[in-house]
Length: 181
Image (cartoon, rainbow, N blue to C red; front, side, top):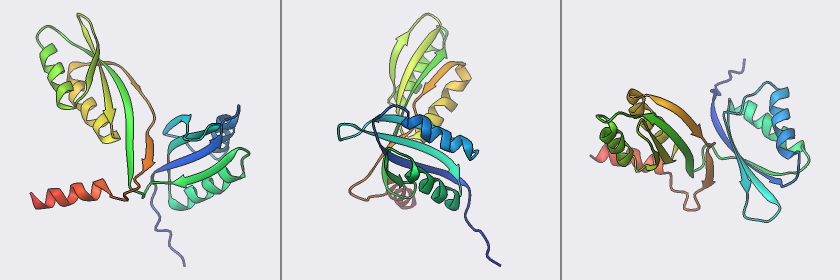
């Protein structure tokens, strides 16, 4: 008997495609037909003219992601598919958060933004809009801190990622640093 020890987790796929109409629709259709959700999606021009990079976060086990990768390669206009989940990467997201404020707590909201190196991009008598750029963990952390003030709106991009040429895994370095301290 063979045991499947593969766990369901979030995988980050980086897909290079020809920049043509309908490519994203075909990719989304592929996922929909198989009943898979795309949790995060970011699309933009790549380093070469006429090529776009699609970065998506997809839940699944290793076998499922392997099958999705094979299916992606069968689509017209898909040039390269990389599962960069276990590869050292630079990952970023952009988020705008509109927070309720009063005269008494406005300074505290501004202080939270400063701690997270976020920018204030709009301010009114009863709201502050904060722009946050960083890794997905930073997004979760600042939302947790701002929740107590009352979040009115959130707009968030999908994760974008590029592999680190240095191959340095920053999560590994953070864990080493924590052990030393």
